Length: 117
Image 1 (cartoon, one colour):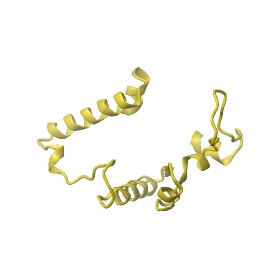
Image 2 (cartoon, rainbow, N blue to C red; image 1 turned 180 degrees about the vertical axis):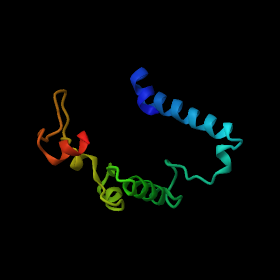
Image 3 (cartoon, rainbow, N blue to C red; image 1 turned 30 degrees about the vertical axis):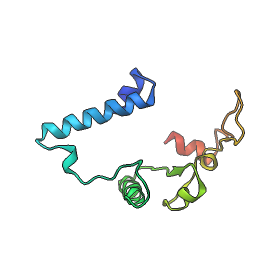
Image 4 (cartoon, rainbow, N blue to C red; image 1 turned 90 degrees about the horizontal axis):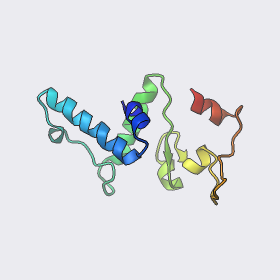
């Protein structure tokens, strides 16, 4: 679903809003309301179930034989996710960025293979 929106609108916040709106409409079409589900806020404070949600999503995707790449912005956050790494580590993103910075992995690397699957 989000791929369709990305093609038409490159701004990620707009894409997120459009996808969430469609999900809300889908739930409403089934006679339900999204607020009736006890869902954690992804950007909420500690102790609200975010780690549980992330682990459940990763497990579900992986149980279906699909690839789920767990990345985080800090080593502490990455360490609590199964298979988690920092985005800089996973994708070889340079710490100091310049206008011509690129990720540092080859076409034949495991990272490239992972991204192509």
